View (cartoon, rainbow over the protein chains, first blue to last red):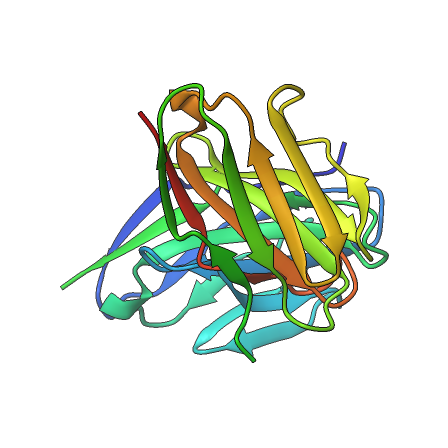
Length: 112
Length: 114
């Protein structure tokens, strides 16, 4: 069935280091991938989204590229800040909105 | 634009009591989603309305949970005979068109069942 997988539950990094949060998916439809970020005691909000193969999408220093060949949409940032500490969800839909799936989330903890 | 509004923000109920949670979607959005979030289970999908019609309730517990959308400006999630395991943050989200569109989440209702 359609599914999205985030392999890391918790990622702890020192400020200034690069980060990559993994997101892979399975679907037979044409995929639409999202990254949502949820800071502590706040609502999730959209960080990035894409349905275009091999095109890099960027926002607020974060970037991701949808690779249909490897069914991946990994989230990256070149230099994490303390304010990036949050829960990050990868989500999968299709371009027609037939279904949606959320990953289990990855907690990013940035330390000084 | 006020965003998605959820009331109450916090609710404490005794075991066996009923809890009704309210959601006002962003004006003009045709889709409304309900989720439950806990530390243990993470973000769980409950149900989805499109143009006020129930489209997908596959995540709703079959007993005690029900959701309605009587008009385009609000949706309710009702939990009958609440149990301690219902304690969670209940999130409502809305989007312009449906599941393929960006979802805008409300601040959530934190439900505590004693």
